Image (tube, rainbow, N blue to C red; front, side, top):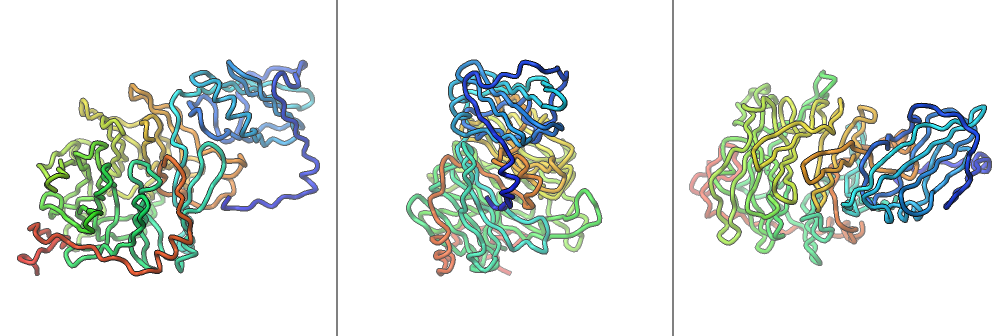
Length: 508
């Protein structure tokens, strides 16, 4: 794990733990407490995948001894009897119980010994028939700008507690590592940006690894926010002039805004960049994302920033747009506005399309697009079948930011600060075939009190269907190498105020 917990061997020797299967040790004399036991994390009344890691929890009730019984319709009952309030469920027994009870409820009985044994109301969860993708990738970053330099990209096996490092910036002179992304959750198709130290973009495309320099004389910045085309040969990127401001607003201490932004396409096979006057305009086009069939490019757009007007720049509201794209001819169709900020009264950010192409999952906030720092950022969904949108019932009173879909479309991962209003942590919610969402649960940890001591943000959680096999040394060696400079297709005639694509005939 990232944080090592010190173990007092003297105390450890006093902890007495017995795990039973089958009938186990039955407590016969107890009183009934007509309420749920207080536990952390809250794993009651949730829908869980049939392949999720054990939901270890801490019992917040006072007692000298605890017994927990976990059971379902089929198989043996799992019984844990111990003096510790930390309940760590054996991985093998848990996986076996879930495997034999897909589609059934799973029950958790909690007993607490005070003067005598007390039994609390049974906790009930449901085991979905739909598995979750086996891995989650994320960036870990400190909460304060004073220590921002210590960061890395990690991956976690969601079926157990194994975590491994994809890349730590301790290998690259503490440069920024960000915007990792995958093509259809494929661990063999990945990209990562490197900023400041040894800058460039690493692209893993099956067995080929390349470092590219994405700056051109026609674009205002290197590549920023990415989205892989499902065909694997194109990556849509925004190019942005981004500004960071600090404020006295306790609910949004930082503001990140676009001075200007446009969208370009990078073609991997030719190492070339193209764009269109339709997605490189005087408006601010940002956060591109592809439809699963690759026929539509979705993005957000806000009006042109007024020069020198900071309020206008920061308080912009973004609408949701899309444009068709033909990979055979490298051409775009006409822009379609799906959801206007004039209709919502809010600003749309980070649209992600469901794998069946029907839904758009996105955040909305009062202004801007950078959801990470805004307490009032919430998750919404747009049904493309009827063009209706609504706020999801999985939101909290705290910040919800980055989000994504599992490959089967049945699970949503998103970041939330609901645990303490400070740190972003990944939560999962079941999304059924009728478009209903269910109570979310936090990423399970081996130590149920892990989140009380872990002082980093989980940033940009992304589902992947397997483990990234690259090691940090391979990535480090590539970072130190020279980057291949991309070529800009100057046959496209674009004259954008932002300066994204000043073509030769219009250069100033």
